[in-house]
Image (cartoon, rainbow, N blue to C red):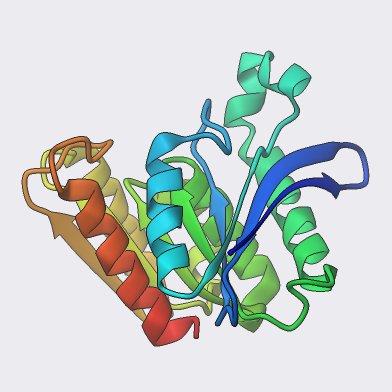
Length: 210
């Protein structure tokens, strides 16, 4: 397992990330975390570890610098976060260790909106998207042009977000599925629920990413 702390040089800033590439990696999943979270998110790191164990690489990175994150409004500036995700994806597409690898997105909370809008931007370059407790409704205008097969995962007890995901599901014009995780709340903190999320995500990536 090749684990590297990396700097991602963008046009205006440099972002910090962690790139993990298993031997003979079949593809790579870029994580787009929710507002106020970071590359150190324990939930995303848990999911990433299980993805790595199934032969796929992962990139967890901060969409904002530390100074930018101190400004609360930046955390909810979806346009900015989409721009950062697009630039970081372009960097990964040309990075020596990942060049030519199929790429997927894993978006959590508001990060799902960023992932879907970036997927719309890249078209068939992005092979699969998984949303965990996501807000795909924040990307409604772009959803009809997303081509990446998209899996929406929502907790059964997260009723408001279920409705938002159903609205987004109807707008998606690609291969799509919505799964309601029994007994789970928004953060999937209940025993075994995050493992269930990871298992469904891995199956989706194995079907469409690799």
